[in-house]
Image (cartoon, rainbow, N blue to C red; front, side, top):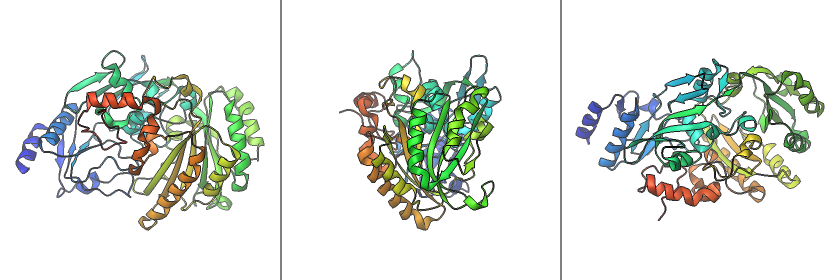
Amino acid sequence: MDIEIKKLRGQLQGRIILPNDSEYKASKTIYNAMIDKKPALFVKCKNKHDVAKAIHFAKDNGLEVSVKAGGHNGAGLALVENGLVIDLSEMKSIKINPDERTAIVEPGNTLADVDKATHEHGLAVPVGVNGNTGISGLTLGGGLGFLTRKAGLTIDHLKAAEVVLASGDIVMANENSNPDLYWALRGGGGNFGVVVSFTYSLIAIKNVYAGPMFWPIEKAKDLMRFYDRYTKDASNDLYGFFAFLNVPDTEPFPEHLRKKNVCAIIWCYTGAKEKIEEVFEPIRQFGPPILDFVSDIAIPALNSMFDWLYPPGLQWYWKGHYLNELTDVCIDENINYGSNLPTPRSTMHLYPVDGKAHEVGQQETAWAHRDIRWVQAIIGVSDDPNKADLIRNWSKAYYDAVIPYSSGGGYVNFTMQDDEARVKESYGVNFERLRSLKKKYDPENFFRLNQNIKPAD
């Protein structure tokens, strides 16, 4: 294959990385250090034409393909063993049109990159809660974050995508061009092609009133009940995700709280400043919190608030559910595991998916579960490779314990490779249509290193 690689190298604007090259180790390093695959080569693409050439090369040489953008996916789907990685990480253009409130974003950008570019204009894309996350994977899976109740999912702001198909053809997908592909991309993951640019509508928002509040772990049951009740009737301006966590052993956290397991809510309020006291008085009266770091903060700072705690290179194993109700027995099971975290960085989050996200119909996008209340993320994390089994076993046991209270399925961005059996459940009423579109756009299942939707028979 050396001759073919040499020929491909001469056709690319980007470059090829092989196992003996000095850049190889860095190229195959992704966010989750638990994943160690050894690709045969990386094609570091500079543009859409490089992507198309990489696809043709892989097909001509019988190579399995993965697509790497941010490399943040917990299952390590960015890498392929002994195959070809289409690496988009150097495609980082961002073009903002402040008058039209749109952004055209290439797939190599992280949430932090996008936040920085849009914030300069007092605008934002509703994205996730970790600045290290790649914008590509986040968007294609749905996109949850601090602005979900206010403005919906990230895919609700995706207006167009330029896509390189399995055939190597380059097409636009929007309401008028390939509308069925456009529908599938909004939640269908990487099943339908390589997106080489995303066009988003932006919302006008710059600073918010946000940050974490902690309560003693002994208050968890009362807090979860209060959280459920208070947020259910709150305006869409109030968002808060619930967490079990271990207080980091460092500044700015008070020494008397460090290393303690606590329950927490990380708030984000986008409403009028004159209503802040009215909205937060009942919250602060509950308990009261043992730590209150809620204050005025810029959106980029909020979305990157915990990046330092979760740098690339840790061991990760995560599982997740869709939940509608926090019944007492559901709360008890969560407390049982959440108050016994296996490592200091392990955690559990409940991300709200109501408010504006509920205004989109179940079948308007591929992301089907528009009637759920929360996405649950059970996250085992460690800096010690020897604890990989510990965090994996804790995550699985926690997940199994909550199954009776799940509404079925789970957010595809929070699933691992061993969750393949749940794909159908996760897409619900949209699954068969997605299978039909997979057959249309990728009949040979060329793009299969994802939470895979197999083509219809």
